[in-house]
Amino acid sequence: MLLRDKVAVVTGSGRGIGRGIALRFAREGARVVVNDRDDGAVAFTANEIRQAGGTCLGVTADVSVESEVRRLFDDTLRAFGTLDILVNNAQMLVNQGESGPFLKMTSSGWDAYVRANMGMLFYCTHQAARIMVRRGVRGSIINISSNGANRVHRNQIAYDSVKGAIDTFTRAVGVDLAPWGIRCNAIRPGMIAVDYWEALAPEEKARRIRAIPIGREGRPADVAWAAVFLAADDAGFVTGQNFEVDGGMLAPGRSAPAELGPVAGPENIGDF
Image 1: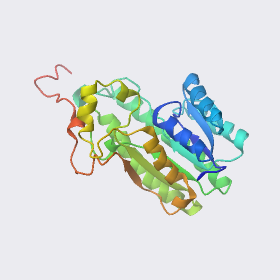
Image 2 (image 1 turned 60 degrees about the vertical axis):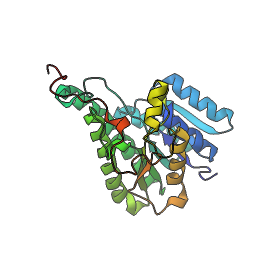
Image 3 (image 1 turned 45 degrees about the horizontal axis):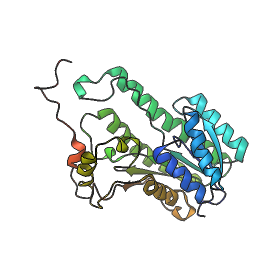
């Protein structure tokens, strides 16, 4: 019960890594605020926590919208009176041309993707930090990044740029909030078995696993345990750090072939 009676907001916790973190936090004694844009996903995770004997609040909100972020934290304070932990797990695909070969990216896609994903990071962290400071809470803020922060993926410039920005944001916030005893760290997951993984063909899964020294794909529970460590009081001397949870994939110091993706060059990119 490393998080007994602590209050934790986990954004994007209706599914995937966020859901895994919310479930593990509840097992460790935290009172968890489950957040997602999808009512059904919120209810699913919240019901699972309650059925296991945990305490939680479900709040449907789009955390890329500042007014909805304020509502999320207002609901948290009404229900639990304080805030000890924030996990910035939510991310958003806008599907406006932010992915693909650089020459075919659109400025509107770039703007929308960066605004949404960096906006939610700032809005949630800003609200949480103000609550913690005003209530004298020596809290923990945990950002879910990606190994794209320090190893790029082909045709994913917007995604990798945002992940790199999350790492820098984490270090800067860790320094700025240190005088109040508030810590800020990030986790960089590798290949984790969430929705996209289940859609891969068996041979593609096997090819990707060959790039992971530990010999298997990651699971949400692997990331959740790292989040428990960073949230717990025992990690009180850890701030401004970025933790890899990738089964050793980046340890060789080179890009894994499974992540390079197809080349888009002069002979196949077409018009732009």
